[in-house]
Amino acid sequence: MMTKTYKWSHDEEITAEEFIKRLVPLVDGPVQMLWECDGDMFMSDYHKLTVAAAHLRNFKDEMEKTDEA
Image 1 (cartoon, helix red, strand yellow):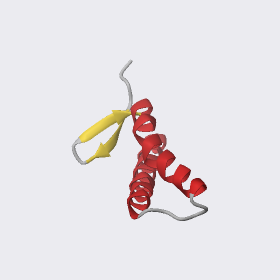
Image 2 (cartoon, rainbow, N blue to C red):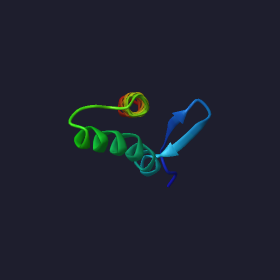
Image 3 (cartoon, rainbow, N blue to C red):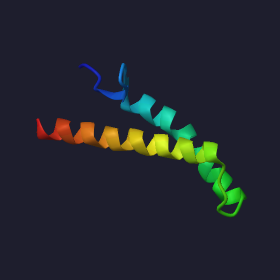
């Protein structure tokens, strides 16, 4: 059985497991900083969260395309 892959970037496709492994550091560090700093956030952490949100949106769109097929 062939493993399903999803687009991570314009030239890279990865498995769902790899997607989660890459997404966790984009979300975990910034959220931890928010907790520690009572809601304050570094711009670098904000950037990581926006990148994570874009990856999640694209992943969801790809999953929906697969469901329709």
